[in-house]
Image (cartoon, rainbow, N blue to C red; front, top):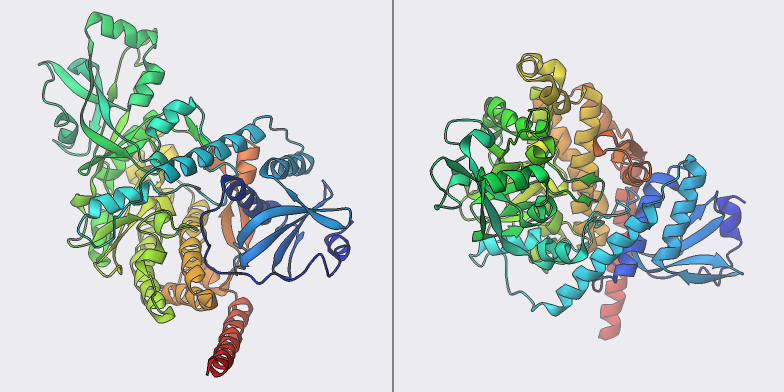
Length: 611
């Protein structure tokens, strides 16, 4: 049976129109959130590319051809990029009608379709979806029990608003099948998760100086680590440790022996509390970010700082200083948070070399705090929290633009794009630098009126170099550090376009379109205009010309990557029809004009009736 045949079996009565709403009426249940995320993945990576979907009468219809299942979900709003907004339960065509199915049944259908499509089996897939559901359920329950916050952007407490934005991502990445999946003990997760508002002191070890592994970008770059605690005995250096990681590694035989010998002293838990940020393993105390290793798999990856990542962060901070200074000079309102040092334990293993499990397991990367780069008078907010589908934190776009007109929203968007887009383009085209500006790697800083004033990029782990433009720099590094630090030009461009346009801009645009549903085409037109303005000033390289012409956009295939258990670096892409394609954008703008005309006529009729 084809999709057309399957849709044809649904009578007009069972496909009755449902008038889509715009902004969500409230938070979804965990069941709905998981189901909608699975639909997003199916639409983007399986059914969409295979042309097995349709929009009819306010619903998405989605056919799984190998499993022989027709699914339906009500739509709040459609999207030019296919990133639709869903509402309510998912239903399956059964016996001439529509039967509601739960997230478990939907997950089983996805599992079956993937097995039949790929000939790959994944026995942990359903368990990981269940883990994600459990985490969302726990976060929603804890949120319901916590007192409501009165934090308001612009009230002078920028740090509180920032931390709340980091800790507000209850549902996670809406195009990942298991956005909140975490291995490890649930009780431990609850104690250290950002969604629970976790804030806690660190565990501190004193390590003999000759057993410290450390690299710094400049002399004194690691002083922020030493300042965390004053009672470190002479001849030792302080090593802060994530308490959860210490629990997992505390029985390591090499570590136990070093503690018994006195080469390492356990100073216990203490000092200023650190708040968990959205990445879980990166903590912030208001002055400094510390990026720890966690032997926990979160979404795709084991969140451990590999030895090459430890060295690579410091090397990039040192070697890219001129490049970052150039970008910050040319594009005021843009900055990158540096990572000037790492520290760990170099305990010899049986072969005499540092034990890798301890070196990587206790490796901590020091990242600059916000105050090092923050523009005075602004409030920093995690971009992912501003752009979330649901208003789960004080920095959400619905709060920044509460009761704002469509023109005010477009002005906000124009200012935001001017800060975000040009430096990312210049980094790639002028410097062969692949930034990774996805929503969780960007902090947007707003002024007292909620308008964008600055963007901060962070996390050098995802920052890569195009080797042809950095051959000398890379040659000066050990091969095991240099190799993971690069993308070839084509792969680097895919990564830039995906992170900037599909992951970040499309989602921020969607949140704005929820506020003003007739503005989506105009918002995309402004994105294109911003890219065109950059091209007009700096020349238009072929890759940018193709982007402006509307070639398909790369979207990271999170569902297929997780299914095939690939490393994140090896993730593939699916291609999405571009909203920049002339026929798509021009038709959308015409539809937008027609919709506004119809809306004005309805408003006029309602006004006359009221009189």
